[in-house]
Image (tube, rainbow, N blue to C red):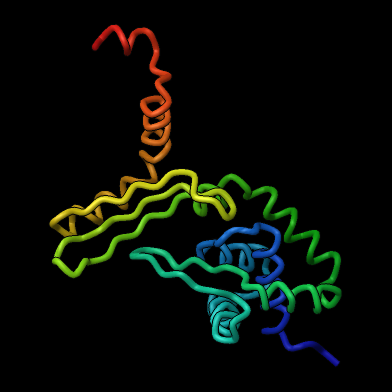
Length: 182
């Protein structure tokens, strides 16, 4: 009996989410499953949708990305059916994730979003995450949606320097040159 292909895709996605142990942008998951040649974009998206609908995966939408997380029941299901996913497929996925590790971390460690508040302002939330921890977070309110969008878009290129500067200032580890300028 041939297994249902959509079930295979769901097992692959659950394995990916388990191995990374982070929320992943939906496009990273779809890229992995299509780059490895298991299916096309439509089938991968459908499998993710079924996982979310059944509660095996969680979904968090931001203004420009959808993040997918393996839920507790998804982890249980993955363990239950782990042996149905061939060792060759698991090995191939693990190798792919290892080779794409930097790209995956860059896309998952940085998070930015905004929403309109009840008083008509726009609140931006920008953070750097590591696994289940928030390492650094900046929340700001601005008057204009374009400003909120600009802040969120700039977060990817400027988050590391902001984090570094905040650490220096808060921990009092400025260099002698910086202290003498004051």
